[in-house]
Length: 356
Image 1 (cartoon, one colour):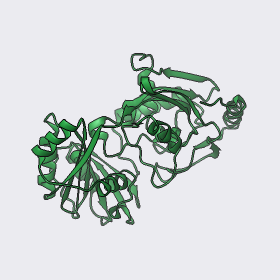
Image 2 (cartoon, one colour; image 1 turned 180 degrees about the vertical axis):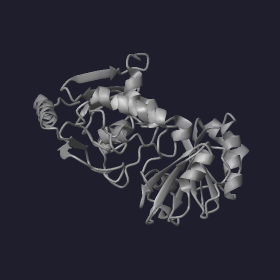
Image 3 (spheres, one colour; image 1 turned 120 degrees about the vertical axis):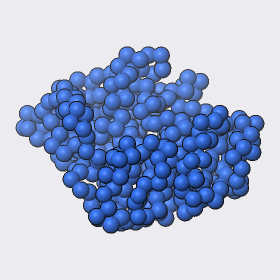
Image 4 (cartoon, helix red, strand yellow; image 1 turned 135 degrees about the horizontal axis):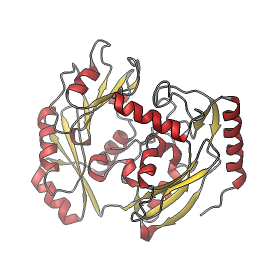
């Protein structure tokens, strides 16, 4: 475990105070792996990587606490040494993001529908506010829930509320056994099967569909994995092939993602295939649909909205906004939160919502 240099935090306080007094803004930045993600990049860059290191890790308690600048690779290596991992499988996009950036973005990988989202594993946080205060929310154990909702609120906030200086995360032991089966199915049949299996007591940890093949990952006790494999059927994928597929899906390295434009559509998992003129890549057991290189005239957001979902222009041209437009009530709530945490508009202006 490491001790942080308090002068780093003091330096950040001075930067925040100076920006507030000048009426300027700061662009919070870790490793920069998600500079593409969000509405815009604005403000003077403030590098957060110097505040790094694992503060506390108790394998027996299944909790790790780290400073915001700690590389994800360092955290995953520490967990792997004790046969543990981050169940929400944060994507790294072929680089090495900081844990602060991971939580600020709030993105999750293929295990999300079966293990939980990133926010579900955030136990506590420390936040440096626009007033120079370092506030603590939550704790290091699940039963300490004081302010727990605020910690989860910071997950996915893209830094617009303050500097996330420290985070405590719940971790889990690695499954005793993990196997992947493949089945040749059309998209509609795959989605129906995913939802049927998810309703059963099966040890699912991933369900995706691409190019006519359904990939189903099973994880848990050996007896449970074998029973699920017998019930689902299909062909058992070679271990190396399966690991490569899930890792490439997690980090968006599959050939499908090597395109010009990309839409990320979230819908209820049982939603039938959308009337969009291209084959999607389906993840999260049907709840996440990726569409590549769509013609500009395709109303992706209308299709998502009609299905009770939302659409994010992940890469390429974005009509009006990159994120799905918020309802007036939700937008007003975001504005009130921004006003409460960052009334001077110092942190990441316009990154999450244009004009905020």
